[in-house]
Image (cartoon, rainbow, N blue to C red; front, side, top):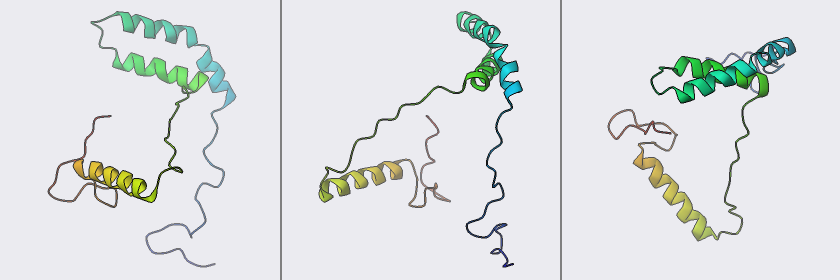
Length: 123
């Protein structure tokens, strides 16, 4: 059996997790679903209480809902590029590269080791 490259535990094309991520057991989902009403009531109470430091409670309630019902679908809109000319595509790429440089991101997708602004952390 051939050895894997130094510093890499697996040969190219192999994985350490061939079965993929394990599924959440159905009994755990059923248990979490039993708390749905209470979780919604907690979220409503927190939403209406301006003085409550409720970050942990909101996180717990949201986590219960996510486990029981799944996370909401996120819709993504993408502008088609097939109708753009080569010049228009180059202009779009140049604008994207300039935006990355503005946030201090280099060509490898990382902030420079020294100097330059740090990437924005706002989302």
